Image (cartoon, rainbow, N blue to C red):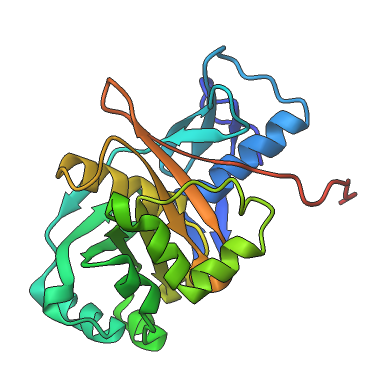
Length: 257
C-alpha cells in the first residue's frame, strides 16, 4: 500500500502474482481496503473509499448491514474470441462444443476468456491441461447457472463442494449460489485461483447485460480447492456493478525495514 499519486484517491496499491504485476484484481482491492481501514485510514469522501491502481481509480463501498466491502467493477471491454482460440481452450479443458453456451473475451484490466457452460456439474468436473493453457497465454474463467429449484440438490451431490461447505465456519449461513465459477490462470503462475474478483466483475457485467443472470446474485467459487468462496454481485439503478465479499484479518503485526 502506497501514498496515492492522484489527489482524489485515498491510497494506492500495486498487485503482483508469481507471473508479474496485475493492473487490477478483486481480492487485493478488498483486502487492502480492509487493512487500510483497520489501520485507521480515513476516507476523503463519506460514501466511498477510493483506491488507485494501475487500471485507474476504483471506488469501494461498505455494504449496509453487513461486514462486506464491495468494489465498483471497472469499465469492461468485451468481444467475440477467435474460433481458433476457443477451440484450443475447449480442448485444453476437455469440453465439447455443445457444453459451451456462450463465450466472450472480457477485459477490465486483466484479459479473460469467459465461458458460460451448460451446468454447474460440468464446471466442477473440469480437469484442465494447465500446461497447454499456459502455452496459450490464456486466463480462462468458466461459469454455469444454477436453476433456482436445483441449487441445493446440486450442492449436496457434488462431493468436493459439500466438503468445502462442511469445513468452513460459514457453512451454516452460506447462501445457495446462483452461479458456479472457476478461474484457470496458469499463464500467471497459478493453476487455479480460489476466488477471483476481476473475473466475477467481468462475468457479471457480461451475463447481466445479456440477460443470463439477475441484477443481484451470489457466485460460488473455489470448491474444487476446498474453499467455499462466495461473491456477492449487484447492479445498481445507475447500471454500476458492485462486487462484494467479506475480509478478515489473519496476521497483525509490524515489520521494521
